[in-house]
Structures are given as C-alpha cells and as structure tokens.
Amino acid sequence: MTTDLRTAAMDSKAWPFEEARKLLKRYPNGAPPKGHILFETGYGPSGLPHIGTFNEVLRTTMVRRAFETLSDVPTRLVAFSDDMDGLRKVPDNVPNKEMLAANLGKPLTAIPDPFGKFESFAHHNNAMLRDFLDRFGFEYEFMSSTEQYRAGRFDDALRAILRNYDAIMGVMLPTLRAERQATYSPVLPISPKSGIVLQVPVTVIDAENGIVSFEDEGERIEHSILSGGAKLQWKVDWAMRWYALDVDYEMSGKDLIDSVTQASKIVRVLGHRPPETLTYEMFLDEKGEKISKSKGNGLSLEQWLTYGTEESLAFYAYREPKKAKQLHMGVIPRAIDEYWQFRGNYAGQEWPQKLGNPVHHVHNGKVPDEALPVTFGLLLNLASLPGVGDAETLWGFVRRYAPDTSPEKNPALDQLIGYAVAYGRDFVAPTLKRRPPTAMEADALRDLDARLAALAPEAGAEAFQNEVYEAGKAHPFESLRDWFRTLYETLLGSEQGPRMGSFIALYGLENSRKLIAETLDAVESASPAAPTQPAA
Image (cartoon, rainbow, N blue to C red; front, side, top):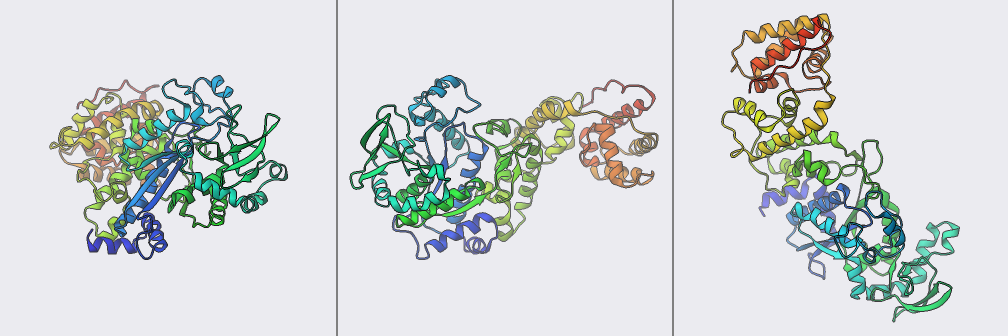
C-alpha cells in the first residue's frame, strides 16, 4: 500500500471510504480482540436471489476493500442465510406451489425443493446465492442459520436471550399492536409434533439450560431451545447474530430501518455493541415499485448479463447508494457507456480523483487498460438498423472505422458487439419507426446529403459532424436540438440517437447517404422504400 494512496483514501469523499472510516473510529487502537473486522450480509432464502441480493454483497465488499486500503487489520465477510425461517407464503415464481403450500410454517431447510434438485428449498436457494456470488469472484464465507443453530454455535447467545428475556420484551412490545403484544415471543420454538416454527407465547423455565414452556397442539410442554430446538423472531435473531458472531459492519435497505433500530437496542441489552450500518435506498422496477424476490419483478442477474456486462452492473450498483434507482432493461445501455466513460478517465487521474471514480471500486483499483474506439450507444444504433443484425456485419463496420481492432485484440469490444446485437434485436429494432420528414426537414436533409457528397469517405467523424452542424444552421429549425431530433426520427426511427458525425464515420459515408435517400423517398411515396442492404 503506497503512502500516497492511503493518504488520499483518508480524505476521500467516496462513500466506501466514508463507511470504512467508521470502522477505524470503532477500533482506534487497531484490531479488535477477535483479531479481524467482520462484515456481514444477510439473505432470506424464501425466494430466488435477485440483483438486490447481489447489490448488498457488492457494496459491502466495496466497503471492505476500502477499509483494507486504510488499515492492515484483517477482514472477513460472512454471507449469512436465514434458512431456518418458517415459510410464510408461497413465492410467485416457483413450480410445485401446492407442495410448498402444504409445508407452510416449516423451516426452509425442512421443505422439499420444488425444483427437485436439492435436499431442501433452502438448499436450492442457497446454491443459487453462492452461484450468484461466485460468478463475480466475491471473497466470502457462506454461513447457514440452520447449521449454526443445530451445531450449538448460537447456544450461549440463546442463553443470554433467555437471561434478558424481560428486557428484550420491553424493547419489542412497545413497537407492536395490542393484539400482537398478546401473542408475541422473541423465541420461536420448533414444534416437536409438526416441525412448524411456532408463533406462540413462551415462558422461560431454565435460562441456563435453555428450557422454555409453551402450548403445542393443545398440550403444554417444556422444550429446549438449544441446538436447533428453536429460532428467534427476526429482529431478535438479527441482534443475536450480531452478538454471537461479533459483527462489525452490516448494511441494509431503507425498508429495514425499524429492524436496525430494534436490533441495535436488543444487542445493547445483551451487553454488546451493534455494528456500524449503512441504510441504502431500494431498487425499483420500471413501475417504480420495490423489487421483491417473491414477486420476481425487476431484473434478474441473468437478464442483465444477457444484454450487459458484469462491470456495468457493478458500476450501476455502486452509484449513489442512498438514492432510489429504477432497475429495468432500459438502464443497461446507459450504464455500459457511463462505465466506459469513467474507465477511460481513470488512467489520467491523480489518486484523489481515482478513489472517487466508480471504476476504482468496481475493479478494486486494478482497472484494465483496454479502451473502446466507439461507444456502446453507437454500436446499438448501428446494430438496430436493417441488415446489421449480427456480430460479423457489425465488426465489418468497426474494422473499417478502426482498422487495428479485432475480436482477438479487443475482447471487451467483441463482447459489447454481441450485447449490442442482442439488445438491438430484442428491444430497439421492434420499437423503431422512421417517420417521413416535413418539407422543411427534407430540404435540410438534401442540403446535408450534398455537403456529405463533397467529402471523401475517409474524411472522419469531425468533418462529418461539422457538415451536420452547418446543414442544421442553414435551415429554420428553432434550435440545433430540433435538427438532431429530426435526424434521429427520420433516419434512425428513434427520439434519441448518437453523435451523427461518429455514426456516419462508423456506418460509412455511402450507407449514410443511402439512409438519407430512403428517407427522402418517403416524402414522395405513401410508405418508405424497402431498406437497402448496407455495405459493410
């Protein structure tokens, strides 16, 4: 670690460093007694993992790496699965719903896998989570709630819960409605009769031996909550985990603010300090609704990676964690281009600017050198045109524009071309509708065509862009913005589009003039002429 880097990191306003400095203040004398800083993320495996799950591990990892820039104290990251929870409702996006409905209330690890692949529903979803995280190379330790409870690793903490039972009830009861207060218990015994996670009042009989009593199917029984005989209510369970594992840092969504508050109070009742926390805003779907793993709305990781890169997803997740952001197909192209824009700036920046650059955190300071000769947006505009629906054709245009490129030498560019073809085919091309120009717009297009005809094919993007500007200024558009909108709507069939000089250079002067000719033909015919096959 260089002195300049660590000094810059101490002053950086990038949010991962701001979070990491909380941990430096937490332990001003160096490592805690356990010898490391423990980061935790939680996962409720009642539904399939989604991007929100990935997002939490990613952001926590960014804070972890920022702390490692500031300090030599070792760190660990635990990805904790609450897989002993009772299944409360059947998710919308899974098969065999009748089987799941017949097992409502049982721990997720005691319910058969509706997909028929794993030991239980929780084992299936835990495997999905680990695949999720392994794909991105996260360094983490997976921890199962069921395994921890059953192995007795939480037994000392459970005894502490029973010893402080009345004080914990004093924290929780004021937060509940009157009817819930009458039945609430921090402890949820596992019924020895039905295997269901019971929501019943309990009486502490022997805290040191973990014995409680409760009513189960009409019978009053005494039961040990140790070694898997019970689990805890969510907020108490969270506090117990912080206490038992000595967690130093955990972030959570805005919807869990109350849970963080109550869990923090409970962990103090147990004589321990709650972890440092960050509350992030939620991802929203296209309708502005919260993404839910049970509903399956929003984007899946697989959907994003069909049309965009891993780095673009990490870049999108990094930005402004305290601001709500929509997460749908339409955000992918912009995320890709903005990622590459920040990546292109990184090499020329000094340390303070680098540490504030999102790509530093996406790549943990090891930002690749490869640059792009064209933007993803430009590739997408080109891939959406008639006759340019495959990677080989698109590569033909790119090689003419940037002769020294190839799939072998430019693997990132080759990857983006594949994404552009897929996204253009599935989301852009079906929406394009080239409109006929007005008489004034047609005059401007003829003027532009004449100006382009006077240039050599190899004149370059700047020369083409200058003529685009001059043609627009020569005609009575209210602003050049209206001229560019005309070009996009009449030539490309879209309300938005690329820098036209770059587009002409990439698509080729001859093909671009053919586009103008086809558009002008629409002025004189009821329907546009059949598109001409472009020459790559």
